[in-house]
Amino acid sequence: MSYGLLKGKKGIIFGALNEHSIAWKVAERCHEEGAEFILSNAPIAMRMGELNALAEKTGSEVIGADATSIEDLEKLFDAAIAKFGKIDFILHSIGMSVNVRKGKHYTEMNYDWLEKGWDVSSVSFHKVMRVAWEKNCMNEWGSILALTYIAAQRTFPDYNDMADNKSYLESIARTFGYYWGERKVRVNTISQSPTMTTAGSGVKGFTGFMGYAEDMSPLGNADAMDCANYCVAMFSDLTKKVTMQNLYNDGGFSNTGVSQKVVNLYEKE
Ligand SMILES: NC(=O)c1ccc[n+]([C@@H]2O[C@H](COP(=O)([O-])OP(=O)(O)OC[C@H]3O[C@@H](n4cnc5c(N)ncnc54)[C@H](O)[C@@H]3O)[C@@H](O)[C@H]2O)c1
Image: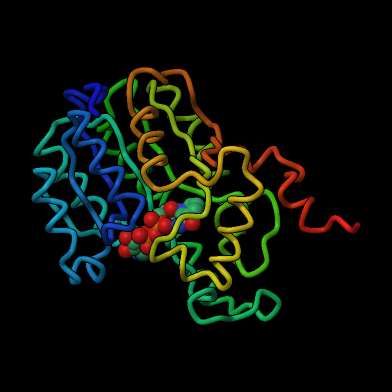
């Protein structure tokens, strides 16, 4: 269903890899709501070619950029400015941990891998905002979003250094969000339920994670489409004064101590 919430709005969406990606669903919903945007991903991810199908479906241009490279980001934003003039929204839907990928235990952290994952998952958000800031290319009442996970606040085994990366990401949203206030632009993170995507399923024991979260959430897990709808709301003019927040889209998981379903698992007669 379309409400025309993003009619006339222009943006950049980072991180659609395949149809399971959260950013993929966000792009589809933004298109339905009337937005125009550029799709971007790391050149290596684009070689898989799946992004072209999304571009065709949403009438979007695809421009590759490694989000850790200021040079790539400058080229991307210059192209966006040439196409749209100023823009209204940015989605940062990017995450990667080499320690997670290679199964390195948190207590045995490889620090070179940590730095790489931190740059991709956290610092890239600063770099994206910095390039947008320097090019002064956001319209007033624009909206910038990044996706995060509750492991930033609470410990989940095997989420590894991504937990620390997400804490850092959320802090960047608050700190840079303060400065963006001068330009009437809002910056927030959405803390999403575990979702079956390429990045998500890379975490050891992920189906257990998902099942536990489902049973602990009064409304059940939020899926990628729920997240996409929340992103649309956050890009729309209905949320103009929401900024520097970490917003939970998790079916109530974050405020549940324990659910009856989980208590029942431990009940002894
Ligand atoms: N899946 C979950 O359970 C879950 C839960 C909460 C938050 N998130 C967050 O949602 C976001 C999107 O992840 P997803 O679950 O849709 O998985 P995904 O694997 O589909 O998306 C991750 C994206 O990051 C991109 N990326 C990696 N390195 C990059 C680089 N150097 N430059 C540009 N892009 C790069 C990948 O190509 C990919 O498109 C991530 O920030 C993730 O941490 C996911």
